[in-house]
Image (tube, rainbow, N blue to C red; front, side, top):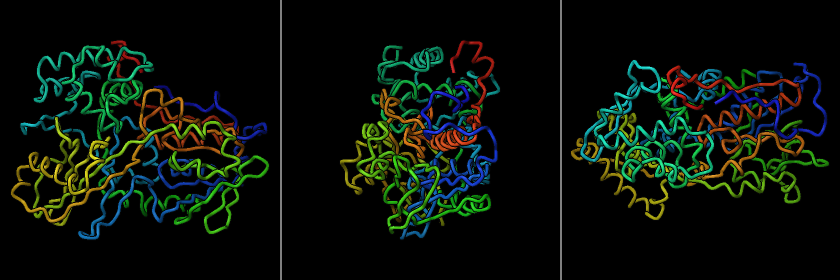
Length: 485
């Protein structure tokens, strides 16, 4: 993937001609960022360091948006709503974490553990071979795939490398037309993609499914490394981040909800808060989930940008997490990827007795018809099959958490409904992983959206072209073999 520039091809932020390229043009410009999730935080971090007067408002009393924690009343522990992970290919997220001083709270995982229905554990780790061969030895040794599975998958991976990045075809159709079977789709392609994209194989756009494998596994030896916060998300987006924002001149207004955007002669000039007060701004960055955008517009103004009504066509997908506290340590591995199971990932978490584990099920629509008790029963049974020690332990406490709108769905053709950062409405910029970031619904996509929003503002007000952080470079063998970025 190429570095993205905001230099052309997008609608203008304002109806006026941009001022000459001059750093001083930023000074005094008031920017209101609505939303304290990753998108809003990324936009604020970029603008706050370049002379803009940034005010960030967040309706809750904590930052992080959907990446959040809550205190479990029974255990008193801070519990993540869902385990969030990053990968080595997420270069913009890494840049954001380094910039705001929270990178040291990430733990790099270089070995992944897969467990099949027979309890056999296979590992994925990089060998000292050039990409895309670095994972080949691990792939060959995978116990949950037969030799014929591996031959079929290998052909599929080569075909994916050579395919154009954009094809107008659902990914399941592409797989079946390239020699894949229901078995290889279930035990390999879906095993990776359902967790990565939070969607089922039959509902995936080819572009984003391909992107996961090419950018995440094939073109660079470090891309598949997993980054996991070593502290609960409430701490990850906590005091260290807040201190950095304040030190860099960003005014934080926590527990502050807006009721609607303020218009004056067709231009957005800030926002009205739910308490009736207002915040004036020269530019407003709307960094809220896509399903909340329309509600913040006065009814008469919502049609001014045709991309706003189109957001109604973006569907969402749920994620379910089941938290289990046992009376003793039950898990020997730091994590397990479940093969042929409802549980897709199982994480060993901290706890007073060390027996706290978290199961994650992405695209969990099939569980939505079940009660929490039924979900607990299904997942607990699987966990105790995966972890023999758990069968002998006592379950002290449990909690089921479902984020029903966890991410937007990467349906075929989704890019048609994803808006650019720059709105045609003067004074408005959009940020959020649902915008045209070139990435699916991930933390990387959220940061990219915030960076692109900041770039749009700087282009318009200063005439400065700002690019995203470069992706990891494709290895020489990947390029020699004709792999397409």
